[in-house]
Image (cartoon, rainbow, N blue to C red):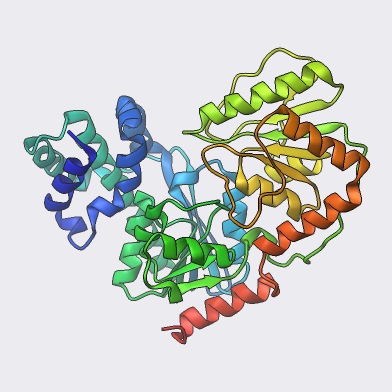
Length: 415
């Protein structure tokens, strides 16, 4: 069965609790990228739905502005901090934080038969048993996660005036955003990373009324993807820089400890290519290379005395503890410059910026040239680094951009 056939079956097989939801869009990310891998772990996922998925709430003031940390990025401390930073732009916020926590959900069984009937209908239309069961579990997870939020809002007598998600394209986040739209709550989603190009689903599956973007490049990418309502894309800057001064103070270090930040799932080949380049440099130099895995991929390393695995608590500490960063991640690339350090990015399948061809490498000799420029011509490197920040960052105060955007969204003055 092709992915297109599966989407067609999902969209015409309705379920009462999701009557007004575009199920094809809601389930897009798991069907397109991880369905085959995850249906092999049905038992593990079922147990997590039954007992381990819960929601915590952190209320500030009246708590009417809701900020949702994505259910799809559990364990990503960087994304959690972005959500919290955005929530602090409101004096009356409730931050909704999904987490893994042992909690048997007895009410799970009350509605389970509806979802099992939907699963049976999928199977009768030719969907494989494992896939149908897995998709049904996702709907259960989404339904009960929303019920937890709804129960909390009623208990605290909170009438939402704003709903902001980290990323509204993943199934549970998609469903919760849809329910907020049904209740006429103004909705917005954050740009949750820096990309050289955006997958079309990021815009087409985004159904929040507003998209909070880093910069003009995001609007350009939205237009390329065919998104028509670009007036609802607001440039606010990265949430990680809320309340921080725009500071150009690149300072030369002793250049000994070089951080290497790898990519996530789907880019194992590029990680292997980066490690092979680093291995060659290890053999020819005395630099210490500290390698940091992406949160969802563990990359094997060769046994070399000057190549070690990073154990930093978060990416900010990793950057601060490094003299120079080598990475395949565009987000780490950008964050490094924000921390007034220099980074170079590996040019593989992604990370090609039309306006910036600097600070990139494809092989060992490219990388060595940047090492040499850093050591012998740092002042010129610093000037070029400032141009990178100018390209990626809005000129205005980022805290003010966020607070103004939230107030305008709630006030309806952007419609």
